Image (cartoon, rainbow, N blue to C red; front, side, top):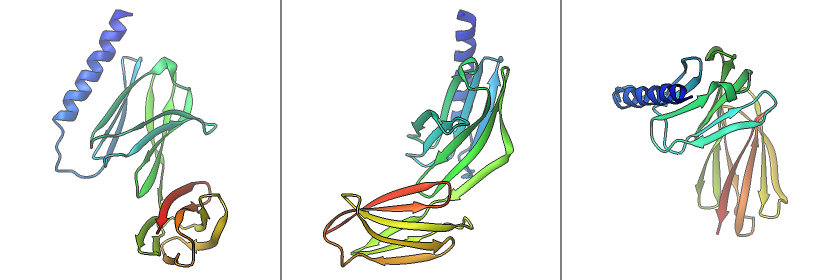
Length: 196
């Protein structure tokens, strides 16, 4: 048992040392999953934006792990024996996109399945007074837009094509908080705005 703890600690220290010595000139995000001594699964991400959400989701959609990256580098060590065997999904989400990667977990290792990557461009909402301009990512799907008031009452509903932009005039709505709900098929994103 002490040997296993020492091996996991050594793997984590090597991971931390390699993260500190990584070259910052490459701004492309990198993701690495490795298995140390058939016991520890090391997840390492580089070049993230602060506040990026990192989740591991099971085959049935249940969240198995969730955290936020405070810095450009993120690392986490998991006990392989406590991980769900089969496919799990690593979700990396920031303000602009949701990236989904498949991790295959066996009883002796975990590895990224490169062919199963998906990236969903999230709608980007910018307010200018009572005008909400929304840029829809290029996901090749129809986006359903719903604007709801603080009580959940629908103030507006429309469909928009991805890869486009729309402006919503909110000047006729009473002052308060409104939630934009964007449904892109199998994913729903929310953004809250205030009208004064």
